[in-house]
Structures are given as structure tokens and as C-alpha cells.
Image (tube, rainbow, N blue to C red):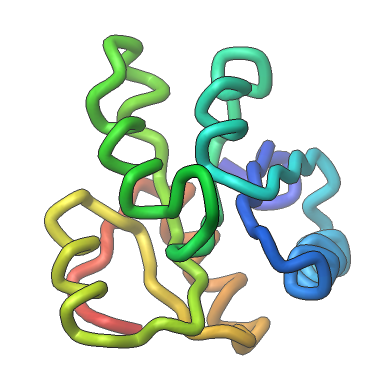
Length: 135
């Protein structure tokens, strides 16, 4: 899938970072964007939004990225449960990364992301590649 045609759901509770990520995605040519400030709300809206990719923070109130991803992977709808997910977090601890890797993430980037690396991860994720190592 062409990155510019992708429907991307961003889950970020920090308004400044959400604005930064959404603005960066727009500059990359991605215009079909949806944004939520926690995983619980995003999970409820998945069926309506039907994204091609999710970019999520790890630590958020109500439902963080790991819990969101666990719930996502357990959905009965195979298209939704297999969505590519990129984590974008200030937490680069080995315990958090090792908890995320078995869930089949497409990338794990530390905030603020390098935009070239983010674009490359988005392209890889949309082609069905999963993360094999920490970025």
C-alpha cells in the first residue's frame, strides 16, 4: 500500500506530541488521520475508523499501548487483529521493549522520532514487515 493512501490511527495522550506526530504525518503526505488520547477510546473506534496502521504511545491513562495491543490482537475480526502497530514512546527500557516484541509490532521508536526513520517504519509496516530488532 502506498503510504500516502494509508488510513493511520494515532494514539497519544500528550497534546504537544500528538500535534507533532500528526503534523509530521501530514508533511509525509498522509492525510487520512485519526487521533485519540488513550487506547480504550481508540479500541472502541477501530471498527468505524478501519485503519491500515496504528501508531501508539506506550504509557497512557485508561489504556496504554501494551494493553491496547493485547486487546487488538485478541479481536475476532482478523483484519483488525492483525493491524500493524508502531510504538512511539519515551520509554526505551528493555522490559517494555521485550513485552512489546512478542505482540508482533512493526516498529518501536523513541520520542521524538527521526522523521526519516518514522517514514521508513511506516512504509515497512504497510508492506507487512514486523520488527525484528529494536530501532
